[in-house]
Image (tube, rainbow, N blue to C red):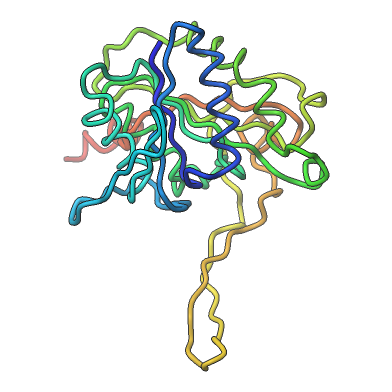
Length: 260
């Protein structure tokens, strides 16, 4: 198996090393793991692509490249340049430092990479590690993802339906904010919604008196509806959410049609 690995925290992020190890386990001794990751942190860029300007892509080592672009750019570079002669069988993105449950999924560069892979017709999974008080003291705050990731990804790959739809599936996987030994298991969970915890903008003055705006996130430990991703994560479970890039609300479409 040939696996392309990327992230949104940057090529030097510790979570990327964790994902490389997971990918190596999946690929096996006969497989290959290729890394094309952002040269700098690209958190919160979503599915952004560098459509209006070029980017530098530099080789950092064997099968290892840094691109001055977004996570989705990195997938495009990996598929259409770095691995052009033999495209990847699987794209993995992460392991993100922090959760991409609930509304965070819409902002996530980690998921942006998985979206782009799915649009390219390649199976993809985005992995994120929820952080909290129970992970702050750990030597490796990604240990839940590191220990449970390989077996879980194999389970998902075995359950993945045959490709046949235009908008291919990708998976949003969030590991709970607990030590690996306290993980209760994995569940299929829909995307939740953190009520009264939106992103906001906050003004601050610089030492020179200039006014700058900072984007602030909401309370990450506010639970969502029972059974949804945030709720199960906070209860110690890994959430696995199958997604597509088709933004159509098909229930609303059916309700609207008779009135047009």
